[in-house]
Length: 130
Image (tube, rainbow, N blue to C red; front, side):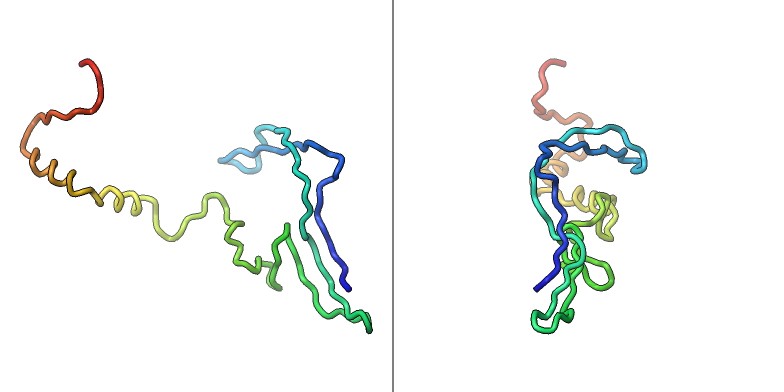
């Protein structure tokens, strides 16, 4: 036996209004948009499991929007899908860009070597006219 807690959308509502927040200032609401609601239910809140014979609590689980939470309040799966939008690993953006720019194909390296001392190199770039 268990006591469950669910989060659900009202079945009669076909549309809902969502606030659009400013990217630079999340406390500022830019607009309100009407979106179509796709009805679904999610585990949300405390689920309490009871021993059917004695009525004692055998286990409790805490859910937050269908994700199981541990005792410290963090998601049990590590919360990989709950990271903020601006999340990045420890690498800085300039480091990853410079590494990408350094990795040139051999054909590009050969072209640059061949035309290193020339002032004007004739290249077909697809443009028309002067």
